[in-house]
Structures are given as C-alpha cells and as structure tokens.
Image (cartoon, rainbow, N blue to C red; front, side):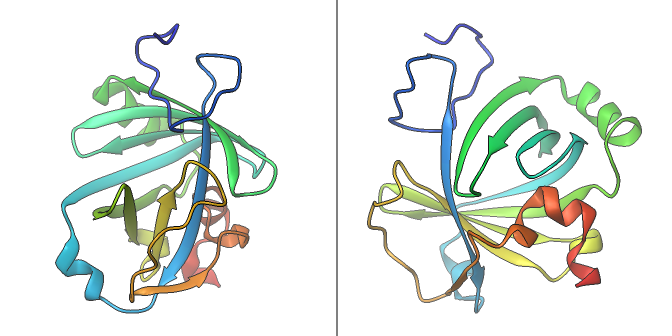
Length: 175
C-alpha cells in the first residue's frame, strides 16, 4: 500500500526500494496518417499548466475531463522519468490553471488506443500548439518489443521540443 492514498504510480513493475517512488518509461512518435482514429477506445479533454518547469524537473496541474491531478517529474534523458501524480479537487485545479500556472497552457485531446498489453496515447494539440499530433506509449522497460502501427511516424523520444514542458516555452506554432 502506498504511503499516500492519492498517489497514482505511473510505472508498472519498477522496484526502486521506495513504495511511493514511480518511474515512467515513455516513447514519443509523430503520427503520419489518420488511420488510428478507427481504433480509439476513449477520448480525454486535457488542459494543463506548469507551476514550475524545466526539462530536468517539472510540476504541473492537469484537468482530464472532470478530474484533476498534480504531477511532479524529474528526468535526465527524456525517456526515463521519476513521476508522481496525485488527484486533487477539480475546482482548485481550475483556479491554479487560471491564476497560478505559467502561460500559455497546454490544451489537447488525448485518444487512447489499446495495443495488446500496452496502450497508445495520441495527443492532438490545440491553442498555440494547434496541428501537432504525437503518439506516446509507456513501457515497463526500454528493451520491450511492441507493435508499431502503420500510422506511427518518426521517433521523437529524444527531441525535447515535443515534450509538454518545452511546448509551453516554444509552442509548435512558432517553429
């Protein structure tokens, strides 16, 4: 049992020696066509803002439909990240996004696509990042084989411009 009841671990199967420590291994790809739309199982409208940011460390508030979360990450290479996520009251998250978060906010619709034992997340950005579509997959380890669908484009896991924390500072519309 996690020491904090609201902690939502992001990594499956990582043993760090600390029950409340979680690690995320995430790969990012561009999307080369719309054929993924036929496989969507769920749609989530997101609005997120960073309370502090930087590539190595970030803290953000995010709303997902009618729920809200506080998320804290630390990374050194872009693929492996320590990540902690706590559910918070929706009205407080809205207030933080409107009055505390750094601007501009990141706005997107996330589409979930089952893929065997994994799940693809397709993020279609709006606002200052309109036109950007990125596919993400979280894996239990970096060496896991996974199916690469026909709509999957270039691997941008190592290109920091595609990370939300970077898209706030340099939105896609300014590239």
